[in-house]
Image (cartoon, rainbow, N blue to C red; front, side):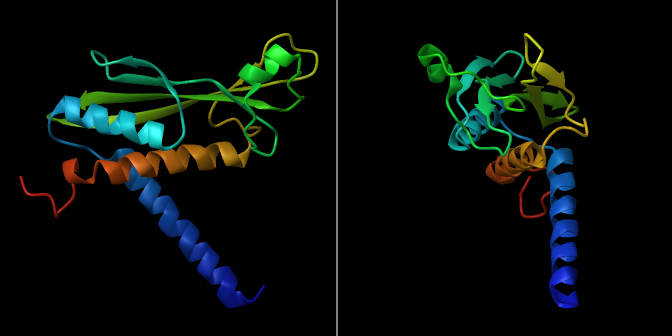
Length: 165
């Protein structure tokens, strides 16, 4: 790999990290119901099934999904009816997305709930999002969802100079 290619990869990674940090810290202003509806629509458009929605608390919960070690999705909910066993190292992932009040604005918090199938454990082993054993593709899915919501809520951003208040 040439030095120029390495430099481009490093610059892209830094830009991506900065964009993600901005998205994590973003604040939104507007009709709460409209913001919540946009977030729900974006979660669904990101191919996550919403199983629970509490408009009073702004909590959106996605369906638990099993992924193979490499991040390949396989519908284990249906597979369990056929007697298929989850492989060691598979990841169970769901998201809790919350639209919460932040002063005069709203903030969107995205929390991955992660567990891993491990030989010898009766139940999936819970992993913290910052656990070093969490595969990188889990962080990638979380970042992609964070950025999709950030983009979808662009008209509501309070720190966006293009938004007229």
